Image (cartoon, rainbow, N blue to C red; front, side):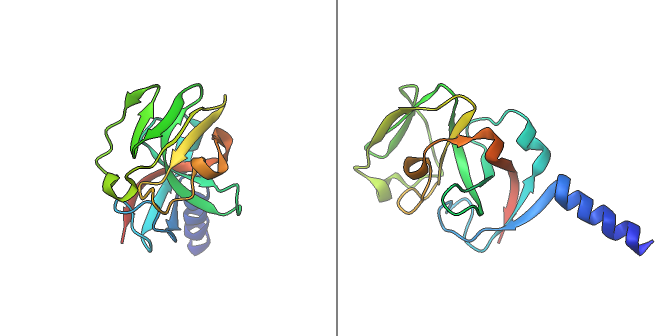
Length: 149
């Protein structure tokens, strides 16, 4: 019986929900460093919407990281004086402290087919798609459904 329970738990973690320890402050204040994020893996196979926080394979170091999807394939992304614009429309981002990134400019860039553009909420310290470019949707491991400190 214990073997069945262990196998069930391991299967659940491998294919459904996996806990992930956040080791960066790039998503603060929404998700603090040291938090445990729960990643829903079946969501990786579906359409990922703008605004979703996702776990993905970081192309810089190969580790799992989390960031927010701000644009999908074919959309243009720009940051003008710390404000995010997707397809030239200002995106309201209550979770971003714009005063910490005042006078920041980026883009515009167009997201490649089969990819998403990811940004950290704490843009002053985040290493994200501004640095490593678009992320293929196939690199997304799942959607963060909750995080606790």
